[in-house]
Image (cartoon, rainbow, N blue to C red; front, side, top):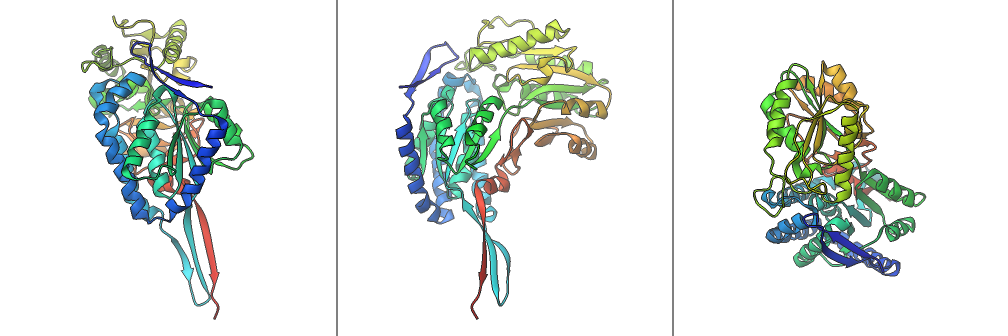
Length: 458
C-alpha cells in the first residue's frame, strides 16, 4: 500500500493523505471510462457544454473553501483569491468556440461524391496536472476534452492532493456522469505501467522535464499522443522606449507572484543599458516592500515555497551566482527561516555562465542584465533550452513583432507578461515540450480527423 501525503508548507505538518490505488483497481477505472465514453460523445455538443459549464459553476460555489485549502497545500496567499477567475474564463471561452472548432469540414460535393472531415474524440484522455496552478492547468484540458466528447481520468499532484476530488465532486454534482470524469490517486510506477500498457488514447502532462521524459519513454511504442508543458526560463526585454514604470511593475510581479512558482513566470530580465539603473531602482523598491509570511494572513503578499526541496534549489542557484560575482540587492527578510520561507532576491552582475540565468529557478529570484541593442537581447533570450513565453516592452509594435519573429518561444507578449489568453494556443518549443492547449488548436489536439469519401450510386 502506497500512501500519498501532502505536507503543508505553512508549518511542515501533514495536511492530507490518500491511498494510491492498485494496478488492478486502476484498470477497472480505465475500463469504466472506456465504456462510458461512447454514450457521452453521442450526446449533443450543446448538452456537453451545458454540463461542463455547470461543473465550472459548482466549483465557483466552493471558492471560499478552496482558497484557504490551496494556501495550506501549496502556500499561495489567500489575499489573491485563488484561481476561479482564470478557471472560469478558460472554460467559458472553450465552450464558446467549441461548435465552430469541431464543426465538419466540407471538402466538396458533386453529383458523384460527397466528401468531408469530422473531428472525432480520442476516447480516454489522461490528465496529469501540476500543483502550482492546480485548477487552471487542469481545466485547460478537462473542459475541452469533455466538450469534444472524450472521457477524462485526472491524476493530480500529491502536493495539491485534494484538487482532483474537488473537481470530480463539482462536475458530478452538475450532472457529468461519474464514469466520464474520474479522479484517481496513483503513484509514479503504476502511472508509468498504465501508460506502457496503452491504457489511454491521449495523455496531457504538465510538470518537470525529467517527469515529462519518463512519460514519453513509458508511452514509447504505444503510439499514444502525448502533450507536454514542461520547464521554462521566460525572459523579459525592456527596450529604450518602454514605459519603465509599467515594465518594472509587471515584470517583477511576473517573477515573484506565487513565490515565483509559475510555468510562465519571468525568470530573467534584459534591460537596455540606458534604462538599466532606473529599472533596477524600481525593481528593488517593489521587492523590498513584499511581506513574506503565513499565506492565511491577508497582509501576506509572498507565501512560502511549496516544498523545502524547491527552496533549497533556489538558494543553491543564488549561491552559485554570488560565487561567480553576482550582486544580491535584497537583504535577508526577518521571516526567512532558511526553509520554505525564502527572501525574494534580485541579482545583477549576472551572465549566462550562471545557473540563475540558464536553468529553471521556479522561485522568487530574478537576474537582471543590461544589453546594448536588440541583437544582443535576442541572442541572450534564445540562449536557453526552454521556450514558453517572452515578454517584450516597447512602444513600437512593428519592432516588437520583428523581434518576436526571431525569438524561439511559444508565446510573444508585448507590454504584458505571465498571462494565458484562452483565445491563443498555449504551447512551447525546445525542452518546454510539445503540443498545445486552449484555442481552436486545443480542440484539434484533443480529437482526431476522420475523412469521409462517399461515392453516390446513380
